[in-house]
Image (cartoon, rainbow, N blue to C red; front, side, top):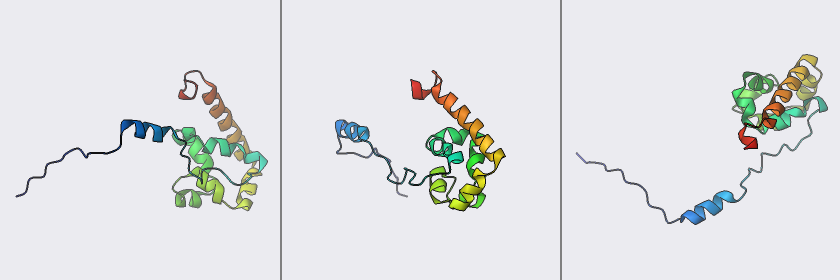
Length: 123
């Protein structure tokens, strides 16, 4: 029987190199929303760029309710959903007063959270 000994992997990268690499901006090129949302839904852009939506049940529902099939197909990725969803479907949701009101309430909660003194965003 062969005994397997686990050892820590060695690296040839210095700490300075690792730190300097982490400080450089490394954003995904597909993160920017390259479309204009209907005016009534524009708040979805800011909401989808922050993980606040993900720990709020009503945040998840805002995106899922746009198109449940696409929401699952795009693995609950709101940025991808917003970039790929059909314009007609966006216009449909923009014309539903109850949805637009839910979005407005959620956005108010989102901006209130971001403006609190005790959040990491304001630390």
